[in-house]
Image (cartoon, rainbow, N blue to C red; front, side, top):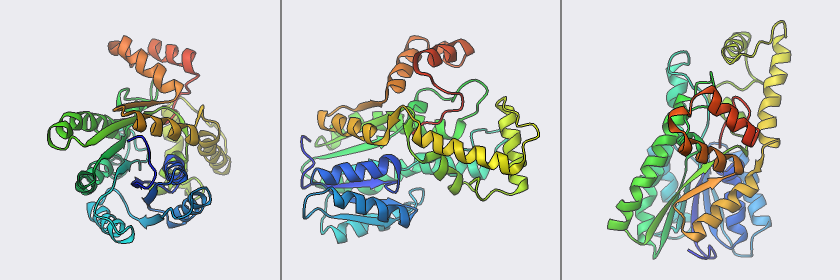
Length: 324
């Protein structure tokens, strides 16, 4: 697919971060876009930014939907068909995701499964629901967002990351399996799996809101649990007050977004270049490329302190750094 002009694209999680940039950059190339998110306010902002940089006549529609609920994605699909007056789409970006609830042992099952459901079932349901519309087009491309945590299941020594990693491994394996499946049964539809490193997005902030851990809304009981989680990572706030801890957690979310080695804008340029080139495997960021190489060179040692030290020396990776 050399050009996105006059195509129709579907983007999940389009309210912020890479989702917003996908909507904006696709629209700038003359692509009509339908995006969903759980925040109508964020999508309104995305739509305004996209239309401001798009050629005349480009349609950008917004749809409120939780990707972990198949019925809501089915409603989203029906709205896309109606509002874009189409029986097909050309591009589907299963991009929505959150991070959190990393431990099977000490984190609550509800939060763990909420993370897994959005990051895995959001991709699976998105594919199930929109694949018939991709197959109805003369050519189509499915783009699933995994992560470097789809081939390296940790954030560093002592940091549990099981929900997110399990989901992202599933997305990677699912997408790779679709290569032959589509080649055999729908050869005009291609698939790519995207594996970002640290990209500057609001995933930390959004995840806290969705999982009920927004530091701006946390209770004293919530802060005690947060202290215990941080202590398990070797971070001791000692006599710091809850208000001081609140400020630190807010700053962490903002720093992840604002101080990342790869911007969302740059990440999306890499993704769209990969789609145009027909690549099924798209690494995003220098840290993703280095980590991919290190894991392939030493898979048995990937979860040792020595491996982590090599990673930090090569990329300035920070302990506890999220992906996405």
